[in-house]
Every structure is written in structure tokens, then in C-alpha cells.
Image (tube, rainbow, N blue to C red; front, side, top):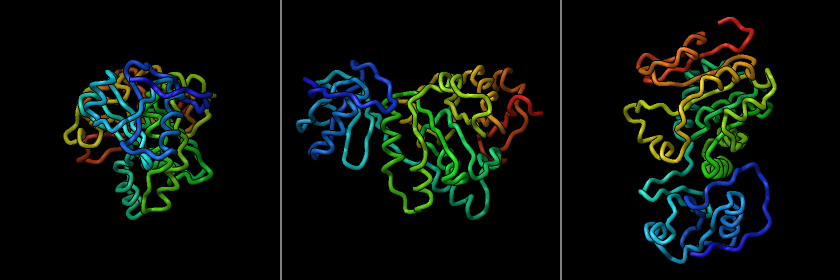
Length: 287
């Protein structure tokens, strides 16, 4: 298969990826705008852009030999794996949790973070962006939420989803639109941040333990995401960057490394919830 012609590159903060494992194509009958978007993504990621030419997705994988495929449609992008896994952006549980917070004032993440209007939040492991959306809702348009996604193609799909996914709740949609999605590994990003430059630094990394029912919501994300274990040295960096707290979401059943557990000041969790939000004070603050 031959890739489309490449034109001048437009830099928007996305790193290139291995072109032998990823390619870009379109829906079966693309409009001109869809074709242009696909070509732009190919340039950003420096990967081949192939014409769909009526082929089914399985036959496309067979002919191209790639492992992953980013498909551009008019209303959304999606990532497909040769094994049949599919990821496309969805705000996940943000809708339910935002409703609960606004009606009964209850959400464990927001209780742990104690956010205020105008705060700055760094979400180091963006994923579906559920906590990032909730944070943006609370801090408002005077605040800032930066969401980090280390996998370039996931960053592209998530940025597009945050910008296009339509919600009936206008306020929540505006909150989602305000999130700044960056293609960065948090290990690199935090080292470049000035001390006390964010109010809250948040982590929700992958863990080896699989919680019951979690594959329904994060299964595809786990397939395409960065499953590198949580780096304790980055918790130290996060404590330098944060003014108020570092928040770590993790399964209750796991034992955190001592370098992390020894600096946790408190926990917020529901009695029946399988996860907890660990609150880690920044440097200079008592635990």
C-alpha cells in the first residue's frame, strides 16, 4: 500500500511514532475535510496515510501489515488494533460524577483535591479525562487543567474528542473544551515545571491489579495506553511542583512502594469503593 503525499508539517506538540506499527486512514466514504484531517495527522505523527478504498478494517490490517490504525471520521477519531480492540474518546463516568457533585456535593476526587475557582491542575495520566473534566468544572474558566498523554496517537484522539464530543450539559461540555491536552510523558513534563507552579498534581496510573468491572470502562484504553509503572521519583517531582497537594488514585488492594506510602498524608475513599485517593502534601507542608 502506498501512503498519500506528505505536505508541510504543522507543529502542535505531538511526537512522531514508529511508522511500521501505526498508520492513518479514513472512514469508508470520506468528505474532503476528513481526507485533509487524516493527511494532517499523518504529517504530525510521521506515519503513512492510506486511502481506505472500500476495504474492511480486517482486510486493511492484513494488507498494510501495521499493528494499529487511526481512523478519521467526520465526527470522531478512533484507534483500532489488529486484534480487534477499539478505543475512541468518551467522557466515561464524568457525566454521572458531575451530576452527583452538583446535586449532593459528593465526589471523592474533588473532596481530596479541595479545588477552588482559578486553580491550576496537572493531570499526569489523562486517559478518558474524567477527573480532568471534573476539575475544570470546579475551577472554571479562570483556572487551567493540563492533561498529559504520553502516547502520541492517544493524545491526538483524546484532544479531538475533548474538542468535539457533544454533551447535553452545556456547562460540563464547556469544562471539557477548556482542558489543554499535551503529548508528554509526565516524567519529562514535571521536571520542566517550575516549583509551586500548579495547585494540584494528579496521578491515575495503570496498576497490575484489575478491578472487577474495570475492563468495561478502561479495557481499550489499557490496550493502547502507556502501562509503565508509577515512577516514585515523579511523585517527588510532583511534590515540588504542587502548591497544595499531589493526589494519587489507586486500588485499595495494592501495596504502594514505601517511597510513596511513607509520604501520604491522608486518604479519601468510600467504604464500598475499590479505589482510594491518596493525598500527598507538597514539600514544606506537614502531612
